[in-house]
Image (cartoon, rainbow, N blue to C red):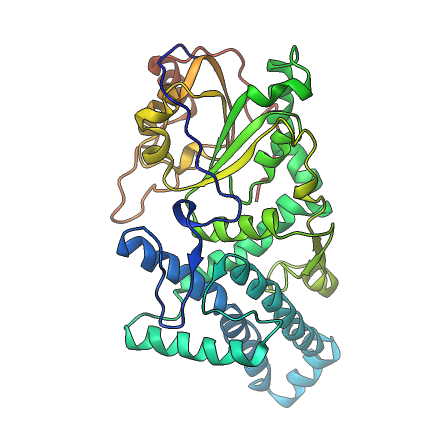
Length: 391
């Protein structure tokens, strides 16, 4: 899709080693977050930190010990049969791997924090004391250590490392990011990669940042935007703290006990990252950044009008309560003649969610809406032509 005009000043919101709105996150034992954000946002951030820190306790209690208890309650005959299958050994092996994952999760949280939080590796005893104080402070404040919905996001974040930053995820990236990258290449084929630094590409809903990174690796300056603190903390860790390829070993499928072919599938290791973000080609000319915050609030502002040569949306448009608001922000942010490249379904995220407004459109209605906003449809490739299993 292409558009025509408006103009304003260029303004980038750097992520680099930062969190929440460009400020370092300071996690203290009394549960405070010293950042220039509203109190509610600071509390939301601390909820996410608490969820990551609760990973081991949550998974061991709900995923490991509960299953062992259920087996213990079987009759002796049934228990012996289940044991002969190796099921108990599998669960006990899973317990060990959950503890390994926890080391990765602690490194992730610590990488985005300074101040009172001790390094779990350098000073484990001091960290234990700090963590106990942190838990007690949340109890005094009447805050749950972790919401169940937040814990599900912690588990899904581990899986997203597979898709975005492992060799195992290459096929899935090729199916979803591949068509986007090819469309960008086709659009700007007349510009050599070393000369693309002045072509600015925006990626809303950037997640762990791999698509934005891959765009930069083709010479474009690219900014990813992300609202979720789960994604922001995780992307900061992998983008800014990775020192070697395959530095970390995680076990992202260890929590999945249903619909699994074999124990080896469930317990298999995945290494990340498959590339080193600090060794990005064209780093002298291509600028890479991540912005933290609501897409409409940031890019709907006047200082973002007519700043972007391309906007790339990957499984993003159906996250809107009102997709018209997304389209308005995109239209204003794009330079005259800029290109919008989109891939993804219309599984409207807020459909039938209590307390949330939602405008659900069919594919044909959505395409018609895009043209009414002013975009010119240059090419359409629907699902029958693009196969994608985006997780």
